[in-house]
Image 1 (cartoon, rainbow, N blue to C red):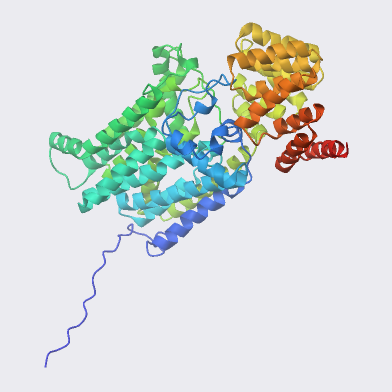
Image 2 (tube, rainbow, N blue to C red):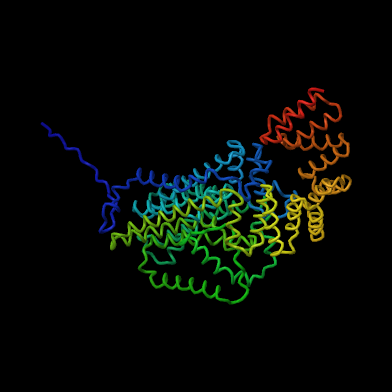
Length: 630
């Protein structure tokens, strides 16, 4: 009779715990499901108050007034146009260089189709992207470190790091988190390919790498991180020359993908990289002297991310001064420490450093930025992965000797979380955002200027006048300052001062179409319809796509009793943008003025059904009743 064989239990390799670990550090407590729950919960709690935020900064241009988002065709046009193509050739003059980010454009288009202009929906999507990226970071660092506690701690730091607020709470700051959705898996899948040997992971990694580049340019540097990982692999004991050769062979497919992206980018933009017009005259010597200061500033924001701002306005370093010497001293000191301990540092630490430093390299090309925006916290989204990994490794290493390290890490996480919650409030509305910028950089003319514009949008003309006057003092040669100063002066009934300001703007920059448009509006308010028509006609002559210029011309023609001309202009506007409520309302009034009652009623009824402005809707309803009664 055969004896029954006992069932053999397969041994499962247990993850080693840090020596001297207690229940707080026990990997058994924080299994994968609990780790993911903590990570997602921390992300949600940290950014819950961002959901009530308004559209701020570039959101107004890229979302609120961007007609391209209303068409499904924008998804296909995203691959053949740059991000700001919808504004090129319009009244706007302060456009950045062209960016090729088709997946970002698609993201905006899909969100617009889902939420329209409902801000909470947009913020919820940003939060979802960040939470997903954080989960990917957890899986990546668990694979790289081989330690669940390291991965969880790093993911929690990543979830709550305050430098991410600019990328998450600001809707238009999403390109970096969006790129992380592909950048992080690409790295993870490459590691799996090298460790497991299955080519499906290599293919998945290459596809994700290409998609990451279509979100933003920064992920193109990923092969450098992969190269450091290859060189740092503990089991690889070959000579450095042979390791470099083998690494180049392994990473060759990524070079092919990057080349394909650059060819596509060049075919659309006609260039690989563009200089910002306001940086073209900055000498290379000044750029090089400023780089160490910028790099150290980024490190400072990673280590102490408190009281952050949209603008820091770092002055360019024109001489070998204390800022240059101090920054160089910090970098040389850090480099010396790494060199001295190069043989004792864990391979994981070198990978963490690469994850932190390599994604910073593209943003050190200062020529592509506006001179007041050469330091931006959103550029730290990808580098912070390496920083959080390094911090987690440090805490777990210290836990081997000091049990209280766990408490210190919890305190730091709480500090980061509290700073994130407070920083979210800065991005709640334009006034709060630019007031922080003014507090951070009181000598920045553009901070005062943008705060003035924020007050103008709220029709708070007194504080707008104060801020725009200060912007004029700080930069008396900026035509756009005088142009918007005129709007504040006009709002306060200072018509003569407003005309003087807008004429000053035109004297400085005769081709400033915004100033011609505003001059026409001021002349219209004074009853000078002939002068107003001249200015609006000039705007349309130079820019036929100007919706504001066409609307103002139509309104002026109606005031001159040329309703046939007004109707023609209003109909042209509505052919381009059928949900332009103001144009449809005015078209209805011009129809009524020419005894086309039925068409007038149709247009006013349609405008009333689209309108969300209570005061204007009340006025429209009254006019509609008057027309119907006659």
